[in-house]
Image (cartoon, rainbow over all chains, first blue to last red; front, top):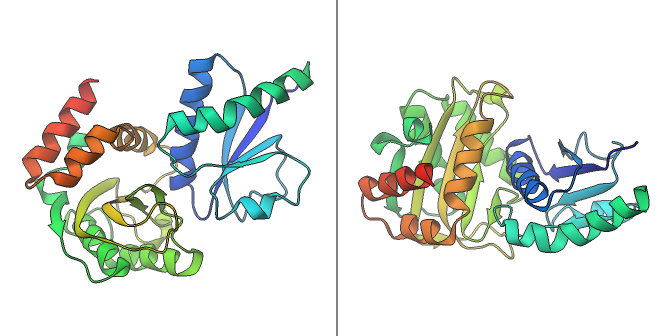
Amino acid sequence: MHQLRIMVVCGFGLGTSMILKLKLDSVLRASGLQATTFCADMTTGPGSAYDLVVTSHDLLPRFQQDHRPAIAIRNFLSEAEISEKGLPVIRQLLQVER
Amino acid sequence: MLADYLTPATIRLRVGADGWPAALQQAGNLLVGAGACTPGYVAAMVEAVETLGPYIVLAPGLAFAHARPEAGALRLGASLVTLDPPVWFGAAENDPVAVVVAFCTCDDQGHIELLAELAHLLGDAQRHTRIRAAEDADEVLAVVRRAGQG
């Protein structure tokens, strides 16, 4: 069974995307949902295999040409925002997987 | 663990900075002073924002400055500077910045726990507000300690 792959992308290096990934992992655990999350920056991200990309508002346009869903988070530390924007999309993708 | 890195030597409060590069340099110089990185690393932190824009402003009022380890990280390190007045980074929704955390690490894995603690510390609105308003390092360290217990 293919596990959902969520790519977390920030502009440079892995520090900021790591923080967002940590928060996203926390949100997934709290909601009991399973997914593989991984970090990328703009050099490694495009061209990776993923089902959903989570990124900043600045970078969102770069992923919107793709047919895959992309969401932008304003506050990387806000589990509330990540839950609100991410969970509906993730739940929908997980249903499609079945 | 965070209390090992955020100490009176790596915290400066109510700093006036003439623009965002100066704000980043203030935070970066604390890392240099602590022996965590070279001045080259601090220059790289500034250059990253010059090149890529203010992607480091990842929450309202908060900038998280870092560069690639190869730019001059010597060991794991973190510093915290609060800015008074807050500084504009050009980050539309999350400007202006009142708290800058600078961070460096030599390897890709060892810093994850420190990042998680920083995210936990600053992700709480009340803690963020207390840190912004703090007048001395002991106040910040008290917030760090309580966050570590929660």
